[in-house]
Image (cartoon, rainbow, N blue to C red):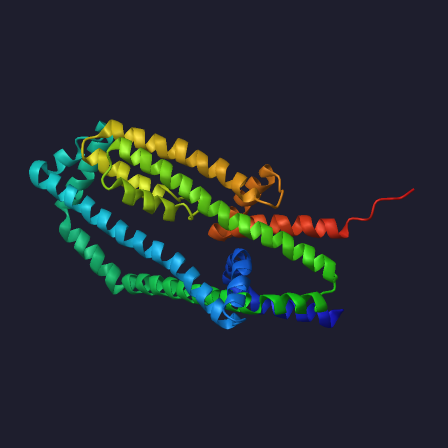
Length: 338
């Protein structure tokens, strides 16, 4: 037992750095497994080719929307800069701040006056920061975060390929080696597979609903490029906590700068109340799926998962709940016959 515990601890230490990409790969592999099996049979039982095609397709589905959102976000940022530059050229700083409330406008004007009066001090402070290595350390931190993100994504892609290609063999091996029994393994894998499908479908469905409703709000408020902003909202909906606010806040600010304050207020209320309500109500309902989990339990598993694991909580929370319920059913004593 001591050696077994040591082996489990060692395996956990090895898997811990990779748990996020492995969980994501497993969640993606579950809804693709049946399609992959049919494709492999159609290709003459070439499982490697089928797994490679499905992995490449899934990678493109993930990467292309993110790349498109980045391009659109850059375009909107350039447009916002052009608008601000035009207002500054025509009416100056006072014209730029005119649509804002008086107290906020006065404070920003005071900040601007201080900045304008002390450029030498600002340059001196920036020079000190650069000499202290702050800029280099910040750049190193950004590069490190990007490299870790790319490595995790690569590991997820590799794991997805092997799970699709060797999924049946891995399941048979686990049923043979697991101490909980083959029937329990089948029930557990089936439950987690259903929840994985519900997680993927729930997140995509919620993002699509938020995107449609947000696009309607952008159209009503007269925001620029409303359909492109709707696509950005779909991508941002997968980011917990901030989510659609990443798109809404800059557009609300742009409407304020354009002198359309009431439309900015309308859009802010629309995004917070209507779009936010979809996230809190529709996502748990869609994630119930075929797993027959209680909606309230799904909701709290989502919230707790996000608080504990960040973005990964949208996946880990429902899976943890399903795993707990499946294991509870396994160890429940049989009903008495007397």
